[in-house]
Image (cartoon, rainbow, N blue to C red):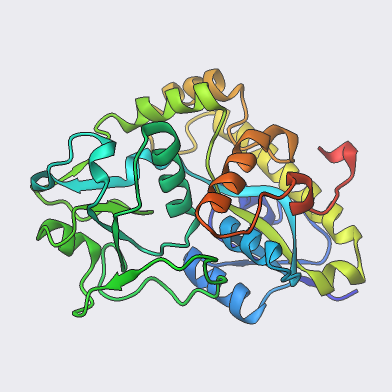
Length: 320
């Protein structure tokens, strides 16, 4: 059997796979720090046997009949997104509903983070996006955000780009756009402020109410690799589960991170997430996955909602 290449970012929950502390037979772990670069290489060129991958791009592909990949219910990246919405103080935005009709910057309209932000704001804050002007670009450096190969939307959305190629942070500071929704915090500027000043509190209460912890990335395997040897799914899944268990144990022991109040954070995690903030498998993530599919349907990424079980290949029940 040939070796299996797996590309992924740097995460505590996958680090043991990279170091070999949790061995997976014949696995070559390729660390790539830029998610956009990783997705472009996997989505455009199928460069790896398996990889971390954009959740929305995978679901879009699958719903359109693109069967190049299968997925595991493993989610290396999850991020609450209330804290990644910034406004210009002069834009007259005092509540989420004020975003209606504004000029909104986003790295990529089709990125998973943007799907989540729009869905949450529409469903939980009644934001009307019908009159929004969308401007794409990188947040903190000039130019575009990667070279995505995601399928086009079923109903096109008019998207603009700054002709000078300036960053979204610069456009927001200049009040040439009113809002940024993204994956990074913009460069500091006196006229830029978060939409939710106490985002951590808002996100915590959002989770308690909905049980939704937004999933950004999942793990895909090239279908040809999976069809040659279906045991690769169980082998990888077991490795991810064991690596996460080790990361959780290390987190609870001593002071492994350069966070002065890490133990307070750990106590909060244990209270809010019952000990595991990054569960794998379908059932533990059903509210989150169903919300993502619903948002993607409403935002014209996919023609209709898909049963969650159809998104993933089966893994041994004993591993779940």
